[in-house]
Image: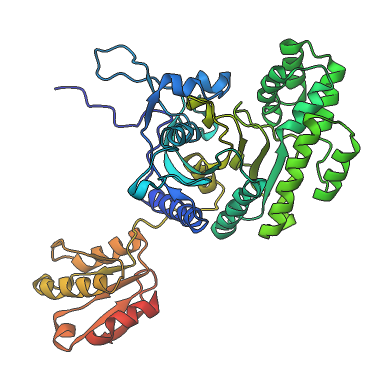
Length: 461
């Protein structure tokens, strides 16, 4: 006898149970609805990109070491293709490919600024501890301009995220914003050039994870930055904790640093003014100079969102990237962009563990039509059809169960799946032209005539 195949999924590749998948899809639909309500057009790109495209992303050494390469068959060595590790890089390539294309009447098929939403799986070969997956959905929105892109769009991205997390209602949250140019300008005063400053961003992005001592050591090893200067940089980054937005802006202006620092401060100020215009409450956002974002392609305003009462990491992040899409054009066009991403697959299990999402319900339907007398199946089927035609999600119990306790098994089935309502009709009920609406969890029951069934069910739900 052959050995049984291993049924467990590979570590890092999630497989949700029915109740989990139902709630996950609900969250996905909320995100999709808010994205499209703000005019972000849905697109989809291939899962596989050329490695030269992925390498051109300036993603940082950590992410480059996590890319999955692919082969066409079991006997072939790795090709020059890879699975995309995020959706921003494929989007930049997509824009560069189609930006000059025209359709009917010679009209451009991609008018700028181009605003897109994209919800797809991505892959990163990470260590799987701490709930981090190797395969996960990202939910992205981005806008790219041709030559210019208003910083009001930088502000609109967190406005959309505010709407999403307000509806999902996971409790209070904070959108922490910064501008990388401010940090780069500060580091220039410490003697780091622009390339070194970009490298340092990846180290500083680990501050919350590894702590001050480890980051100080890494900065010294990478750039021979003295402990005093490293501490000065970290103290600067941590200086605005607990401050209001206006207090932080005042502090930054008082630094009197020109050049890149001041340019970043101007951009950050414009973004904050835009968020206020969009009506984002100041109780949900702050300036946090520790936000660096590890991906090298970010060039300006950046942000991360966290739940205040639950330590589950960033639930949404993004920022400005002015130099990414242009790399894929022959003329190195200036195609500034800004966007954000929700790593929903990574976020979801943490929400479940924190008790913020209930995954007990095992059905997407609202009503179960039971079969108390199997001879009446044509009538039960018609009831189920009438409810579905009225837009009520309905399941019909079709199985012929053994006579002994056959109906109790259907009640148990309804309870186990979490049904709030089931329809029960005996042969006598059907002859009388009525059915019973019953709550399987409580046993509460009401009799309803056939022609009032649809409205009665809608009222109960």
